[in-house]
Image (cartoon, rainbow, N blue to C red; front, side, top):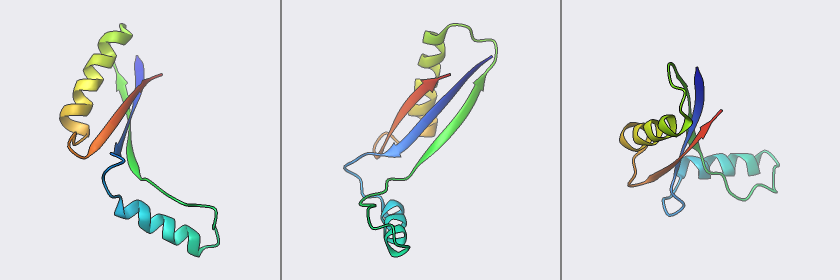
Length: 81
């Protein structure tokens, strides 16, 4: 069994209102050193019957692009464990 993690986040050029709200809340709680927060999503995925890491990466990249992320406003990163 192979495990992977897919990270999805907004592109740097896209405003992140939720991240801005979190940053403001942290500053209000006394964490003055926090200057920016960007929020995102993490997907932990288990693959069964896959032994080729390159094939697994290709499949996960396709899944990330087609289903997990909106490529217009989001970027993603795949990590195999």
